[in-house]
Length: 99
Image (cartoon, rainbow, N blue to C red):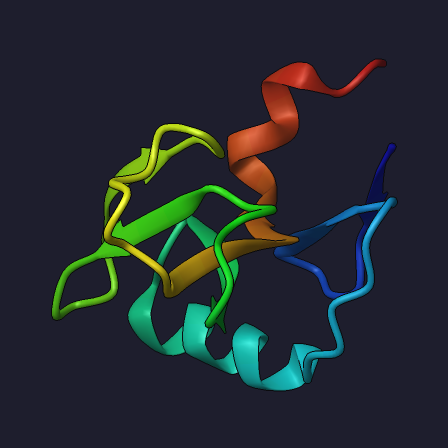
């Protein structure tokens, strides 16, 4: 289940409903504003990737790749996982709104 919440005039917050990720939304919102990004995925560092896929990022925090659970290199035991929280600029989603 996904929950779409609008907490400010220019961003939608999308939250995956089957997980809990304790984050400070204000910090992520400030990051989106300062970087003028259109889409942000909240990541969490995990020491146990057995239940998750992994997301690789570069030095500027841009996503390089996604690897699904079960497709991760055997020697890889830790890394960033998808936290299930997304910030999306409203104009990106407007074509999908029902009128």
